[in-house]
Image (cartoon, rainbow, N blue to C red; front, side):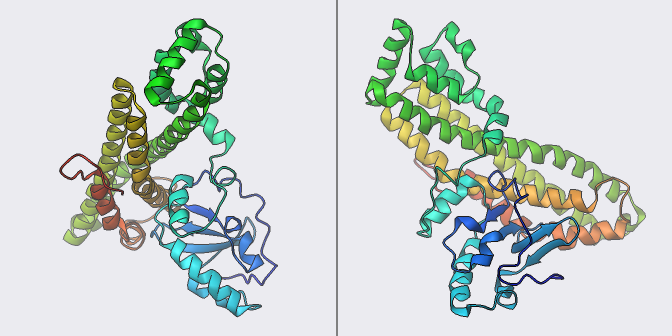
Length: 357
């Protein structure tokens, strides 16, 4: 790292506004760390799928990335406290995605107490952005409860308000029926909706990540096709194989991700075809069991494709040799692991139960 970051002297990071909505960032102020200077840093995933500590990011000073094991060179005030913090950070560094849904599961497994409702939630702006992704999940509920009133619902907040204060006898009757099928009191329906909304907001979030990756993947496909046609690659069988491996691996990862979403759609349809408390809880468990696997695929695609786009922002930038070096050194590391994660996320054992990803 080219810039020192002594305790208490880390560059201001107040401009980092994308933390809670990102797949590849973990702000360390969320964690029970002892070294106060570390709380102004964050963990980041690189294009190589390595976890680094980002001590600062500044337009003039650049980005301060350092390996977790190297923090002792930057923080020297309390070695015992730093060793404890580093032990925790090394465990967190093994997490495949830092999206809020995967973090809820992974931090809980590590016994780290974080207020999920305050810190591990998407920003209001991101939730608003995901509204159109939610329509497929809210529509079955709207059909069950409302007729023409459904047109008044633009987001989950509107739906919660309607369910909390129904103004038609027919609506009340429908709500009582739903509550009965779920084994709930009528007054407990808003809480059910909050759980329902959170589950499907997670799917909407991952779908939006998938869509962003899909657009870049198409662009990368054209870039790879152009690279194949260069004399350097056409006369080098190893280069041809490398490009083919990258191309087929990324396509396989995207296909496995699509398989997860098809499973989620089937579970949603099954829930509303035969609404029950057991069905809802089973669906919730199964979707949550996929969070870490789907998060890993989305995060892996995001950092790989994002790293490629930053390295080659325009089609004509970079010589063929530079492009091949980038594929070897940045794109290939960890790519086979992502393919394996995708296969596990879609594997269903006899009996139909899906294992946790």
